[in-house]
Amino acid sequence: MGALSSVKVLDLSRVLAGPWAGQILGDLGAEVTKVERPGCGDDTRAWGPPYLKDGNGESTGEAAYYLSANRNKASVTIDFTRPQGQQLIRALAAKADVVIENFKVGGLAAYGLDYASLSAINSRLIYCSITGFGQTGPYAKRAGYDFMVQGLGGLMSLTGRPQGEEGEGPVKVGVALTDILTGLYSTVAILAALAERESSGQGQHIDMALLDVQVACLANQAMNYLTTGVAPKRLGNAHPNIVPYQDFPTADGDFILTVGNDQQFRKFSKVAGFEHWADDPRFATNAARVANRMTLVPLIRQATVFKTTAQWVALLEAAGVPCGPINNLEDVFADPQVKARELEVVLNHPLAGVLKQVASPLRLSRTPVEYRSAPPLLGEHTDAVLREQLGLEPEAIGILRREGII
Image (cartoon, rainbow, N blue to C red; front, side):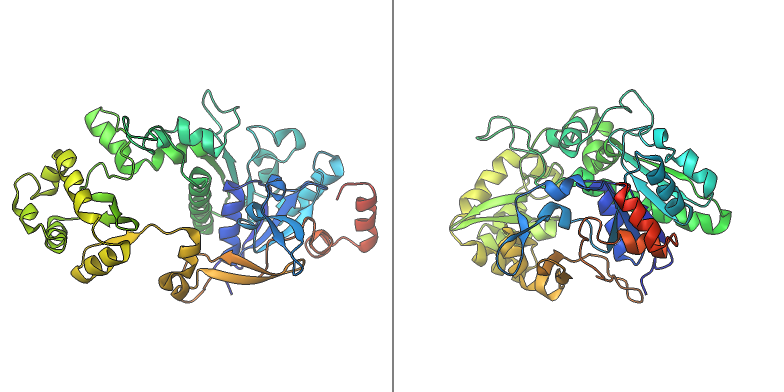
């Protein structure tokens, strides 16, 4: 049994941050019921191509984006803009431990599905609201999306080629990282609230904001600014506090060199054939290398182009110097370490037969992650959930379907 097998989650969220949190909880064993709009469902069901293909190579209509964040869930379609649908949601929330939602601030209050309304019928309910800017502040009513928050929250000011280089300019991260991080922080908050409920017996409201998470995850760069009052600038693939710690060209491409201390730099210098670098006062310490970055980095770039990426990786690994290639995703899933860690899993899918997915990175020795079910088809479990969780008879479910409530 999973670590959270006794936990029931009602997932009212769409797109990525909320569904990501719901998937993590589901991977850990929670019973997750995903509520979607009849007819269209989660927005990301239509965010394609690409779409999953069946055994004949035909599209199933299931977008890869949706499939990335919704395994281990049951899909129920309910129109909660109508009173009967609201009653169903309230009945499900009365039996739930956790609700996850990412509607605009105040958006669910009109339907009686906000925290105040649902906690009145279930005082143990943990209600996690995910928005762009939080429940308070001058931006609270604004819609917030990952790309916009990457810019507003400072991440893009740190990401991209430095001013004056070819292709200069701010660049977003290649995945919706702010959404993913918000999903992770939301999961942490939910688990903390579940733990606290063990002693208090009470649920609580969790106010998660993409902007809050983005600013918090600026980490050392935020502290670089707060410590000095000087805003960090884009460094491309270089590190603001460590040198050399970036990409370098090779005879057949590029590789990444991540020297973390002076001893590693001495080892690298010896492998590169320039052992005297480690004794040069301009480069002997990391502080000196950071100060003389513009001198040292071109020297290293001139040296690395004479060997292939594979040669550099083999030589530096043997010397104990951290380094690695820059893989595309085909390379990633063919990598022996990725294979050894079984980071690709295969699930049964009702339309495609099989579905490849990325495994959870959570490794628990006694209560491991379980891959119980593929991301559900829209409304796949409506009848089963209403019957098993709410005790509705087939006749009552039939009436709700004819009236368009489900």
